[in-house]
Length: 270
Image (cartoon, rainbow, N blue to C red; front, side, top):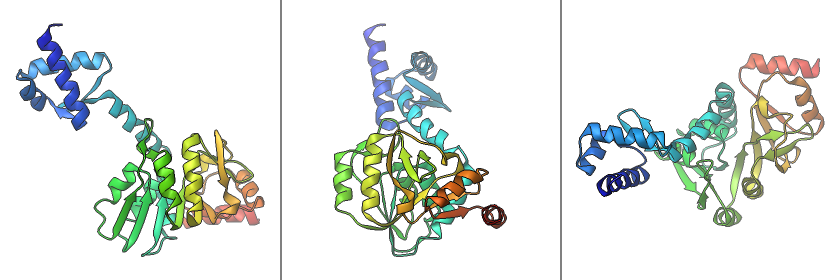
């Protein structure tokens, strides 16, 4: 590869890092070459795993991987997450301050709050901050910190110190698992530590988790749902674990259709 090709390659990668995604036309103008030449260069870079081809251009492979992981989580039980988000939104009043962690279920809740009035959202989630940005009645406080490499949210000492100085009416937190005793788990030590501080900073805390998280454990427990206001979950089919959670003192709040809730209640009280 000659110096000119190396220089063009470096410029392409720099533009993609700075902009996130570029069209073939933009790259061709910047490099002063034809569209065909840029397409050949992007094909080579894609073969090396440095870029991902998009419709009409390219994006850095690292960014696409980063976004895909979160998108993949968002696509697990999407209907259940929407139902849980809608149910959780009923617990939020105008004028309140609400803490939201960075999960895909809390993002579903955030979408339900965009038309509220005088609401303050405190979050570590970049997607939630983006969702609330244009909500006219909502003030959004994005906690500072380091951007996690594996997810679009913030963590670290600055995030934790900010949480130490804040107070909210309600916190909604997700979970990677909830066992039969009500212990709530996260797969990341640093995120679990931050969630503990979020819970401490809130007047009341609700866990938002679909039925696939019930009866599971992850790396570390950051609290017990029986000490909090409740667990908001969809009407999944695992009645045994729900009964165990009730016995452990967890307040279960069902999301979804009235028929589904009634069916589950009949099982527990029948």
